[in-house]
Length: 421
Image (cartoon, rainbow, N blue to C red; front, side):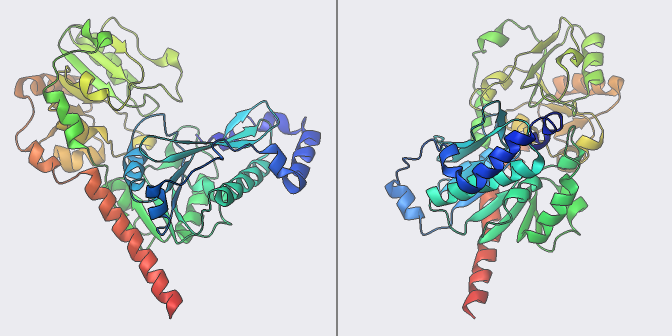
């Protein structure tokens, strides 16, 4: 899934001359071939106040504008406390130029996108990224920041960076995902050795990783309750959903190899009177593999702000995940979001859904088609269980971020004490 390894092998043998030129450029003329957008960065009064606080630089395999999930929830909160940079994986283009594109989002996060030429070896890609990031640090006067990793592969071009704290927020078992780099496990082992603190995005992932680091903590996905609770009072349907009759069963999120498409197709076939609505991008699977029936609707991606408006008019929310290697350790953020929206939920037996939501009686669990259909019928009859709101009140993103930063600040404080001895 890492774009670092896409499309390189087919070009290497035919582009050695160009690589040599680029290697020379790395050594002698790097500044001329890099273009920094937003290089006229102005420090606001708020930013100036934060300059006494370490910056945070995040290295991610995800795009900031792809799907709003764990990194966006956490780092948007971080940006209210300190300068925050979110470095994405590179975009490869036919142009021979290479540069960083930087832009600031409304929440305050600086999103950094490397643009590199196609057709280079992994070593050249890492060398260019290292040079670009060194330039970024110089341009923005970033010194000994908190380095926050979502992808271990980023260590291949950031090992040279000094940091006041190295964090690995392990939100998924990336090595189990379709298209994952074969070197990912090796880089994760190195990152475990370098990290000062490790967080996991769920309890099952914590249990799988707990013996790999001495300072590891589980911080399962949380929720912005107020945002999704809007769905309880919204009555107007979005135009592209308004024409769909009830009952409606809904899902939002990335539609990829983790989705049990056979189950989805089976539900749609068995119950043509039920309408199944899917919201989100399709990734890493062929569009032709999506089941097609008159009662299946794929409405595409929607913004985080729009989600409550769609969920508001669903009768049941679904988590129809496949049970495979890629879902073994997932902790779906949408589980508490569905519940906060006031919807009954039916899920396959994902461990971090069973614990705690299934055990608390908040989510119906089933795997076989017949059982899943039966649970949907039961969910429609019963509605949402009681005491859900009290349970969700204990797991806000604000609390999660505060807990994470307490661990980070402890590392920084202990490091300063040792250096002053």
